[in-house]
Amino acid sequence: MAICIVDKKDTRRQQKFKFLKMGCRRPVVAAFALSQMLLHTTASDDSRPIVQWFAPFLSGGGYCSEAISFAQAISDLNSPRFSLHVTQHGDSYNRKFVSALPAETKAMLDAHWFTSPTATPPSIAICHSEPGAWNPPRYQTTLCPPEGTAYAIGRTMFETDRLPSGWAQRMEAMDEIWVPTLFSKKVFEAGGVPASKLVVVPEAVDVAFFDPSTVEAMALPDVGDDTTVFLSIFKWEERKGWKTLLKAYFAAFTNADPVVLVLLTNAYHSTSDFNNLVARYALDSLGRSLDALPRIHILPSDLPQTDLPSLYKAATAFVLPSRGEGWGRPHVEAMSMELPIIATFWSGSTEFMTDANSYPLSIDGLVPIETGAFKGHLWADPSPTHLQELLRRVIEHPAEAKKKGQQARQDMITRFAPSVVGAIVVDAIADVLESLEAGYDEL
Image (cartoon, rainbow, N blue to C red; front, side, top):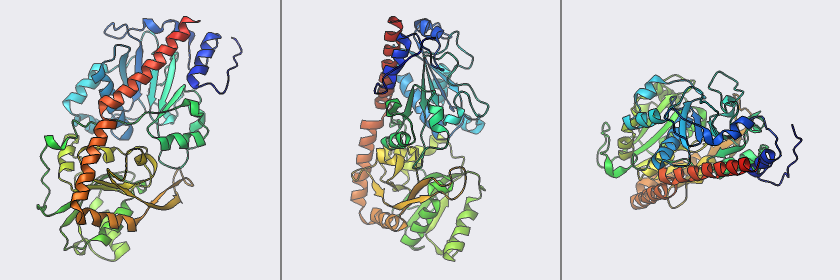
């Protein structure tokens, strides 16, 4: 095996192809895979190079929804350059989530599904999960990248000011790391990941599914034409800023105001009795019962995904004062539905929020996480005072709020529609394949 020396100023791809030309192997590269790259076959005898996307497609949650959106976008474009395989990876099977998937999504996944190993490894493996699942995984899951993969890409993100311990080291085995935002790119660089490895690839939002012109508003109890509906969608954890949300909402309005805060949430290491959690917070922090406070309506956690557009359509504005986001899936769904959003202007949401399309929520600084695996990391401290002001502003300036919502949808169509993001991904994959083929030709 040759000793290989490359210029550290080279991009990651340039370094990789120098390795190939000099007859070297990196841990995730197999010479056999390179020599056979153009001979890969799928179950349907497709002769195109294989791109295998490993992700928690059947698990629900952020990585899952993002992976499905990528797969759908790539499938719709049907690139002649490669064949897409999708494989479950990184999390457990969620029967309830899968049963609620739209029929079209199930059909798309089924068309590209691949569970058993291919005759030869994929040309490109995309490992879409938290890095602890990457090969060698820290827990039982599908191996990604498979042994002999020609080019390995990691897709991941994080929500605080730094990388978790060990992440940078696990990224060393990857040829590229795809992150959704410039914020993530800066955090990963500061954490020791070479800038040459990092590529910003945004997340797509299904602007056809989340289209306000195609659905009727969901009927909500005791909501009239003059009721302002604030909608918040999140999992019940400290990171999502639910205490800040309740504090600002209770301070901004009274029980006589025609407003309602609608919550769609699910348990995360907590009880699922959310009515009791909200009531306890009101009593402990304000010394008041919910009857004496502005109205809150909590939806069933198992609301089908197919009902989400009509739920957004029923809202006046979306609000989420989270402490940190990798991206912000409910944010962009709401924006696609032409809703003005009030959200923390820090971390992932800075990629798509502007003064023209939203109400950026200021922060009172960064504060340390006090408990858990990421104790000592810093995340945002959203301003409850500013949030209170913005909640009132939506009511007092309805034309402004409507204009922001209209701009939000236009921005989602222009920047993050599946066709737009899909083209970014397909072009990135084609670039890798061309470089691999050039390296193969010169061996």
